[in-house]
Length: 319
Image (cartoon, rainbow, N blue to C red; front, side, top):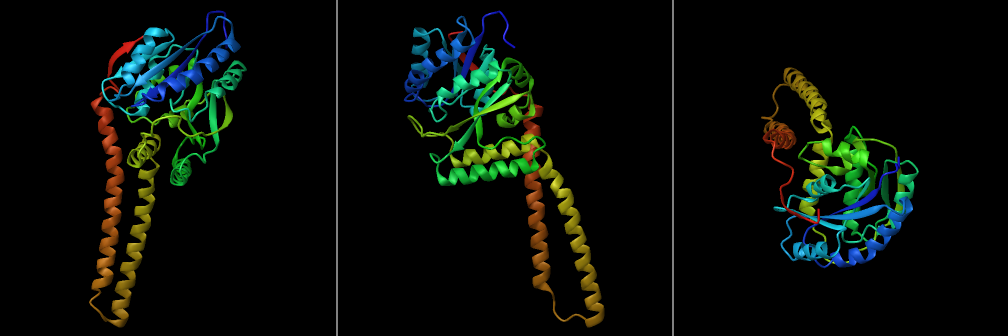
């Protein structure tokens, strides 16, 4: 895997209003990255590609000053906030390393894992995933909803994803080139990492609390992210309605037969308003739910048909 030319390790760091977290991140990460590069060879270089996802605070100014002082730090400024999935995709497109590691700036994912990741990469792994063995730093609600999502997703997905694995992982250049060739605009990177395959290993860690700032993942955004993940990776929710519709039709025919027989044998003993209204409301609810699910897919089809870029780069520094 490792040839005679000079190798490079790249970090991809999406940031959105993270001015307070950048310096602590670099103070802790740069020494680790230097040691990891030395594991490959004495000539191995490194780079940290920050992707500024439309920050409205001083994030761009802080990073711009850092690129002037350290040639290893590079900056991609997006024209607005496109979301973390798009920002990570932009970072993968701009990173030039033989091994590329997406990581968050909040230090909840420990940079110290980069060294064991590189060791496993040198041993032949094309991808090394960081698995969270302890998430007590997250709220109870977030842990429960995350576990529920992983289980629901893996029940329907054609290619399951590993639970408690985020974007923090090492990706070989060969894997990144495949990811760069994928053009879908409703991105769910965890599913794409799993879909491409390749030999992979894992490292484990305990998730820490944020070093600075606050999480930008509010519950409404997480809900929409979960919908994107399900609809971008499987058509099972649509297929379910084929079976549910068939079962409902069978139940409706059976109930109709019962009503006919009951009327013929016992006559009409009540107007049947309550039972009729219940059936109508039940069927109407099913129809609305089915239309909503189909609408989610149609909306994502419309995104793909429009063909707009996944993100827009306003400027770059340090490249």
